[in-house]
Image (cartoon, rainbow, N blue to C red):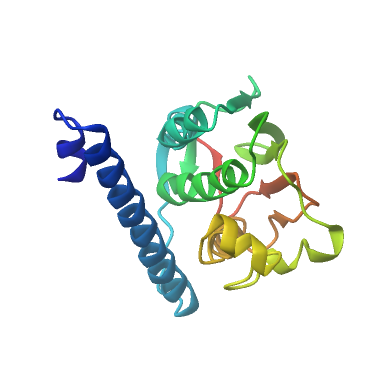
Length: 211
């Protein structure tokens, strides 16, 4: 209803109020969704789909949902998918999209100028088995090497000032890490010193080429 109201004629003051309401509602919804997902993961109640899907369409859908946020901050949102990445893959498109939205969204959140980019490279190791390397990089504030692992812990951020300035539950990266481990059979997560966030999906319960 807030979105519909924002499309009507409003005074500047009314629009400011409604945009604040929408921002608060979206933040609350994200908190609820993060807690629900984390609870399901902890309880072992998340099952991954194994279906055929269009890989580039999945990537495009994830980034499209973040394009407005990048535009609002005057940031350039880039995507580079290697041409040798298979068009059709088998896996869970919904969870892959969720991971990418979390990681790219996190990069956008902590970047005030410059760019955020997603790079995907493919490595074929045997018939119908592909390793996909995902790298999210940005020109943001970064994080010290000694704190990089703590940001993947539940309800954790680099420091308290981060929470005050940028908000969030500290669950987004934890959920992404757990989902990647599930998709990659526990071996696909590689935490890198920011501003680079990288992970690899290997054959198994992750993604593979469409036969």
